[in-house]
Image (tube, rainbow, N blue to C red; front, side, top):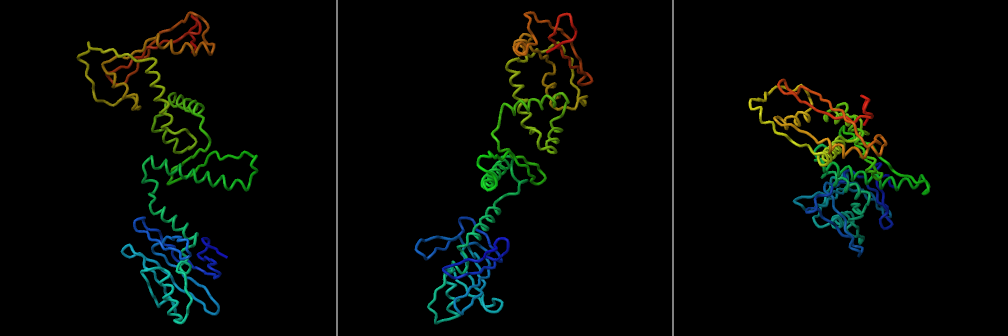
Length: 363
């Protein structure tokens, strides 16, 4: 009975002979330009990979003869060297550069020069063990995997996606033993942490319309807060269920582009103020996006046509039955704000009134 990889003991029945392997070092597979193979003599030409720094103890018996040897494979100048140690504490060693079978039969000849028995080096070294092969292949993969914090964003996404695919495959295989096929089981999402980064993987088909409405609702709360972009990014690091910061600001960008297209901002150059000087003082606001937008329009006036705005919003107000009159009543007002000590930002607004005689507006 084999206990590997729970323990380092592996047992295999090789041509009616029980071989017991004590795994000291599984070794690792070298890169493809160095990796060498050995071939089976059974006629099917099956090839087996030869791992580097491979070390096991092999025991077997045939009739009255019992054997316990140490088997090693080490690459020297890109060539595998096969070694067998035997006798007390494996102090007697022989080696071969030809094959595992060659060194195995050298050992057998030393033990009994009159024997006509032949040994398979593949069996003696356990090179056909699927368990050892899987372990070495995992090591090979890990040797070429970079730590997560050394990856770029694209590679991080690819690695998480690949991990999600493996989880999904494992889930589908395991769940069949616990649920009836008619139970309509489904893997929805998983949460895990990599180097203190919380990661969520969703497996359900994305409802883009629902997702977009959710992001718009979050964007509305962020703008009303207001919540700065860096602050929201910190919140998403603490609460993984919040929409990602880049998704929220993608929605914001799309809304701004739609507004700029349907209700364009016209620019009016103000050339009469030649003595106007911009001074380098700290802003009274701490939002870099607002500052950047304001500085873009210094010495300029930006305005939108009221007719463009009405054409854009009236169909929605009529559909929601907020407006049902052919006459629209507007109230004009203004709001001033100090952006710098010598620069005043003035906004003129128009409000659609619910009723011409009412101050309270709606819409």
